[in-house]
Picture 1 (cartoon, rainbow over the protein chains, first blue to last red):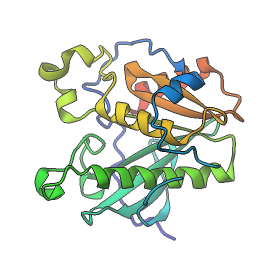
Picture 2: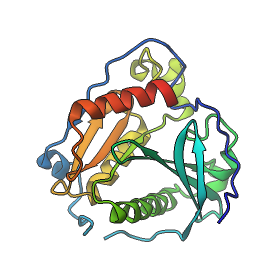
Picture 3: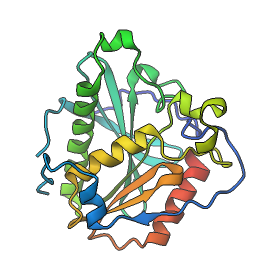
Picture 4: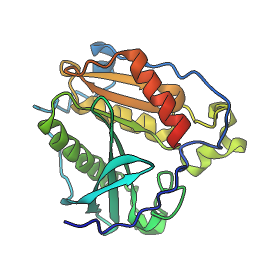
Amino acid sequence: MGNILKLNKSSKTTKKAFVSTKKVTHKARVLTASDVQANRSMAYTYLNI
Amino acid sequence: MLGQCFDYKSVGKTTINGIKTDLYTFKCLYNLAYILEVEHHPDTIFIIKFFQKNHKDSKFRYSLLNKKSIRKGSTGAKNFLIILNTVIKIVIEIYSDNKSSSFGFMGAPTKDELNKKLNKSNINIDGTVSQTKRFNTYSIYVKRYFSPEKFEHIEITSSSSYLIKSKASHLKLKAVEKFFQEYVDNYC
């Protein structure tokens, strides 16, 4: 199957408000199981995958 | 169990900014075509991005929202939910092939969230935007479906990034931070 799409391959898309060379340290946090549970509705079931 | 999904099809592979990317398309309730990109990164990290096909030439393609006239008076919530279900269905397909796959996204800011006059407190000096609406929405959505028994949920709220990391992956937290740092520096 061929690639029927011609996408804009520019390197910068706007996921930032502006392009800057300044650095920010972005800290990652692992959510605990209870964090995940607390932020979800019990109406949904986890995927069986 | 996922709800309703749109029919999607794979439309090939491409390389964007040196990143191998799989492409999928589907049509939403308003008959608008969407393009979903699945970027392949080292350590079996897949970054998921999608946008409306008619926005493909805009640098704001990940940020744009549907106008009211397109939504025909509705909130668009149902349509949006089915779009997310469709994205997750594709994610499941990829995960089924490799159970150590991890899936990441960045919640792109809306145009209002990019506006310093409207959202100064959430715009960082590197241009990233913290806790965007999309980040908040997507992060609630993925918690519905991805069990913490099989996946680690990793949030980087300051850059609106999220990784659903397979527990079969050996990636450490520092490596995840480094990955997203480089992603912000190189691709955003």
